[in-house]
Image 1 (cartoon, one colour):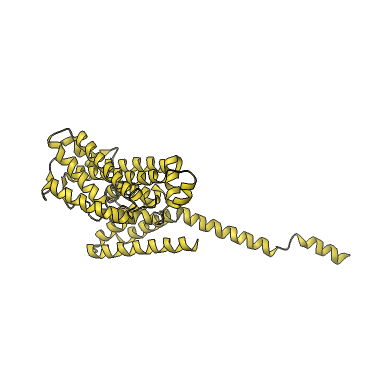
Image 2 (tube, helix red, strand yellow):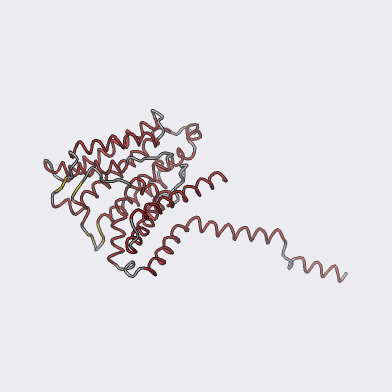
Length: 337
């Protein structure tokens, strides 16, 4: 009897193997969930801390403001690229769209108010986005091929419009958009933050955002559920064209110049930032906030390389490797899931 009582008393105190395994899984899950949610942000702070230890001027107020200012143009572009990739597409024409918008925003100021010139430049970006979306959704051209074609056409139009020469000069008020400050913060940074907040809300809280994710995740299932797949697919490209045009206006205002070569490699930087920021290249998943952090990460890396005197061609190699590694990891994990 005594032995049986002892056994009964100890039953509650001896940990069950299945219970301990469940606790370990829960802890493991929590760690994975934390890394998935905040890993990019942690990487950003760890990278910044590491760079600050090897460079003296990295954490200076001037340099930090410079990093934010440098991030703004690609950051605005990356907002639109986020929607395109989430929707299951790719747009490599945004760099050329930036160039055309910048050229129009400056060139038209000779015959009209700068605000009207900027508005026309933005509307042209919307039109380009619609054409890209129409080619991808209705004509069923692979998005990368469709936007490669439109990118070449747009770049040619920029050369025709500018005659192959830079367009310089602008109305003084126009400079405020790219070079002004508000409460000590560069206006391009404020524009980027406002647009990022707006489109993050649209992506996560509105029907447009939810359906864009659904279309990118599974077109056939979305179609069976009654979603207007083609419409939302086109809308992702329209948003991409809109953001590229706005970044072109900011670019023109900041530099007071627009050349036929403006925006080269900006599309690759935007795509890299979006993928680094956690948007799946297979579509259906991503956040605008993650893309902005991705832009900041790339800008911090570039800034550090410049402070350390690393040649530009080596920077291109490293950026390319980063893109390959991140996309490779994303593709591998997607297949395993």
